[in-house]
Amino acid sequence: MKKVLSSEITKAVRALCISAACNLEPDVAGALRTSLAREQSPLGRDVLSQIITNFEIADKESLPMCQDTGIAVFFIEVGRLVELDGSLEDAVNEGVRQGYKDGYLRKSVCHPLKRVNTGDNTPAIIHTTIVEGDRVKIKIAPKGAGSENMSALKMLKPAEGVNGIKAFVLDTVRSAGGNPCPPIVVGVGIGGSFEKSAILAKKALLRSIGSKHTDAEVAALEAELLKSINDLGIGPMGFGGVVTALAVHIETYPCHIASLPVAINIQCHAGRHKEAVL
Ligand code: SF4
Image 1 (cartoon, rainbow, N blue to C red):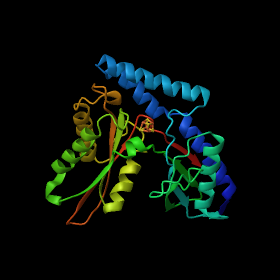
Image 2 (spheres, rainbow, N blue to C red):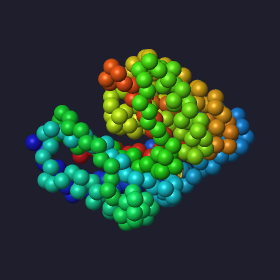
Image 3 (cartoon, rainbow, N blue to C red):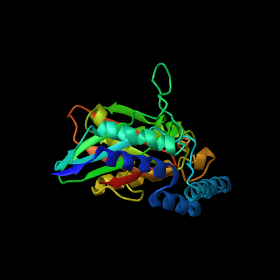
Image 4 (tube, rainbow, N blue to C red):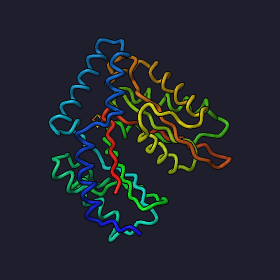
């Protein structure tokens, strides 16, 4: 067994919160830079240039790239040979508490009805999986509300099939318009159950931009949807243009014969994600 201390997890999470807010990962930064040459609308190009300048300044000066530093979402894999000396949730939440305080990141978490801010951006949303090995892998994806609010979930009838899925994705992105701060990444979870499809959609956002699904049929659907979304003309920040989305990532899971859950999780251009392995 390998012992992992709560204090190590807290320290790693603190650092992840700050670096995710300030330093855009190369896959997202690269996709935004590449998209500039594709954009045909002058206003769209201007907006894209400003988005690029913004994340470059954030990176250089260690400043958050957006005022909405998000709710902290984690996907954590814990090796079955790992022995933790305390509560994983407590250690992660302490890291979030410290990271958001020390990094001067906006605390955006409140009671859902009373709307009273918790004051330290906790609790985090934590998805944990037990895996083989003796490592703890922590992935963070802070999520702003502008794009999260444009997400949707629908229990389709199986007879609606792939055409129903395509129509739902396009309707969702079309009605979102400029609200989720395009260029967006569209995570689509197909199958499983009501809640599983939503988690799949979120997880899909963590794939490296430009990566294709390993199933050729699903990869073809990703490419077709990306083209259809970019044909909608929404453009960067909704000002019109051909660069509405940088990628469509789909994840699938077997489902009940009588259902077809489909969840769509939209990620804005501030596609923040970081990873640490202990
Ligand atoms: S949607 Fe993204 S870029 Fe827009 S305000 Fe929210 S976090 Fe910032």
